[in-house]
Structures are given as C-alpha cells and as structure tokens.
Image (tube, rainbow over all chains, first blue to last red; front, side, top):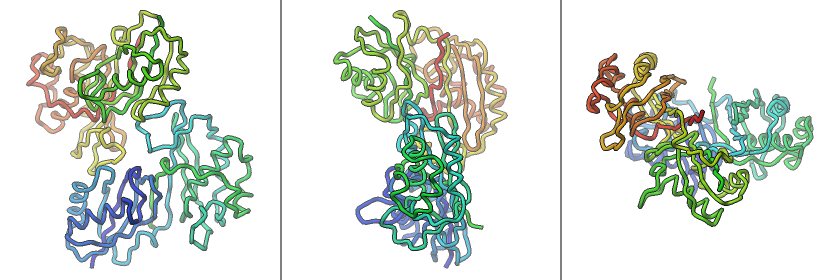
Length: 245
Length: 245
C-alpha cells in the first residue's frame, strides 16, 4: 500500500464544502469520483479540514492510501485533465504510509478577503465579502492581536459543534489593506467550527461600533458565543496554507 | 439635454462583447435594458470601444445623452442594484454635452494576463490565458519595445476589418512577471481589430521559437497579417484604462 499526498486549490463557490454529504456536491466527492475514473477503484480520501459551503482554498491537503502503482506525476496530470475548472491539483507526491492529512497538520492559515469599496468588483463575486462602509484597518489590526495566544475559544465556536476541547493556540493575526481589498489572516494550531468567520464578524462589529474596542479578551474569557459578533459570510474565506512540520 | 459619463468594470466571460448584436447578450444591451428599467425610457449609450466576446474591462467608459433629471449618484446606485454581478458601475458623472466616449478618448491601455504555471488556477478560469510552458519574461519585454512608435499596424489587424487608416501610435509596452502571472501591457492612441491579441500571440510565438527574436520591426514593415503570430485567446484581455486629456 502506498500513501499519496494531493495538494489542491479550489473555488468553493459552487460546492457544499469538503466533506461528502447526501444530496449535495462536495469537493471530496468530486475528487473521489474523478480518482475512481482514473484508477477504476473508489479510494478513501482524508482531507486536512472540513470546509463550509462556499469556502475556498489556495492550499488544501489530502491523502489517499492506495494499492495502485500510478506515478504521482501521472495522477496529477490525469486529475487536472478531468477535474472541473473550479478544482486544481497543485501537487501530488508519495508520503510515508503513516502520514495523515488531518492528524499530522501542525498549523493552518486562513485568509478572509473583504472588498471595501463603494462599488462591487465583478472579479471578486463570491470571492470576497462586499462591505462598502469605511473600515479602520489599523484599529482592527491592533484589536486582532488580542486573539493571539492559547485560549478556550468557546465564544468563537458555532453552536452545534461536537468538539469538547475548545482550547486552541492562535499564532498570528493581522488585518492589512491592499487598496480596496482588506486581508484578515489568522494562523492557529487548529480552528473550531466557524471560528475564523466569527472572529472576522467580531472585528467588523467592532469597526461599526456594535462592540467596544478592547473587548476581545473579555469575550474570550466569557466563553459565551452570544458575546462575540456575527458570523461573517463564507464567500470571503480561504484556507491559505497548511503546515506539517 | 444632459450628458452622463458612466465608468464600468466588467467580467466579459459570459458576454458577446460590448456592441449590441442580434441573438447574443452584450454588455451594451444589458446596460441599456437596465437603464430603461430605471428611467422608463430606452437611451442610446456610446461606448469608448468595441470589445470582443469574452474580453474583460477594469475600466470602460460610455456616455448617455438624456433628458432625464436623475442625479448621477442615484443612477450609479440604481444601476449597481439592478445590473448582474458581472457588471459594476465604478462612477457616474455629468460631462459637457459635446463629450463623446469614443471620439474624445486620447489613449487606451490594455492588459493581457497569462497564467504561467504547471497547474490551472480556479480563480483565473476564463480570466487569464493558461500557458504552462516556460516564458522568458525579460526577453519578451525587450521584444515588446519594438512595438513602440507610430507605425502602420496592418500586420497586427484581423482580416475583415473595415478600418482604412491602420496607422496607430503605441506609447508604452511592457511584459512583467508577478510570480506565476505574466502581465503584458500596451498603451496606444487606438487599437485595430484584435491588435493586442495578435501582438501577444506574436510574443508567445517568439517565446516558443516559432518566430525569430528581433523580427517585430520587419513584421510591422511587411504589413502582412500572415507574418505576425497567432491571435491569443480573448479570456486574458482586459481594457485597463481609458484616457481623456
């Protein structure tokens, strides 16, 4: 048995996230169907993360244990020829049999894009949150630093999550403006369900004065989802980088 | 009668160019239909340029002479609310009655995007030419300088054009690499039918050795379309800037 690491890039706008579901088209399913066409056999694919409906990835890792002897280079070419234009394979390579895309991941980086302009950008449709009101990027960048550290992030986890341990370590946080596009970036050892979207929603609620600046430490401390801000729409979210040390 | 200048941005992938046609959806038509809904009257819209099927614009100017008293700001808001997501209004403003978006334009800048990578990018699907082979950007940038100047560009004009005067002045030309994306830029007082796409196709033919480096002056001199390279696909082309001095 061999183990192949597949690195993807995808536009998630038309998918119901990564994870296979009944009655909805997902990335995992589309990839499994395409691999089945190539290898003549349905293989199980292990993804590094679940992603929500409409969420994108600049880098998404998954692994497949298989007894096929196809070369990684040939698999990459065949996949890129057969996958829809919304999914692309950046790389395929053989890894040790024990490698697991989810368990072995040491940190992930998410980016959230906000279009801050008084007109929409057709090239960012379903690819950035459209937010026409003034955003104070410097202030939000300073606020975002309060997320850094090891905390119980229960206040930033969507209701309904079955995860028990809600302690995560946020390693980096930044809010940067490139002309009319604002990039919010978070790196952590792991993220809870909707965590990035709730952190971005909280920053936007601070921006519009609905939450007082300086509140993030108390919100974290409260462990109460109702103290944090709204959940920002999925269309601006990108899994940007997955690290395996 | 008032004259309103409308500045657009559009993703041309799903349109048959600017100009109204029978049995095909165009930008001009879509804009006229939307303005008719707002003003209750069909107005004639003068565009700065025809664009081909599938070609995009970061900036496209058009003007509308109307007896409506709608404010430019209100027109912009109403248009952005009603236009499809592929067309956006960056600006609306009143201009002198004599202003003509096509005749008064003193120069235009086009950008052509090439994705030079061994895997496709889902976010550039129909928005850049996918070209996986090595591109020598420095060499092509140096070649592109030979387009600069006032020349008869007959060799770079698609057959079937009815334009008689094929003399144009190219003011700037550049080929720049940003990681895996190559941007080819041309500014001229005007462009012939398919001129940018043939100039880009010629550069790519020089890159792959089908045309000898240093040939551009002779190709221009020949005035023979057959001496120039292929016509590059429309999906990488953007009208980037329109100047009125």
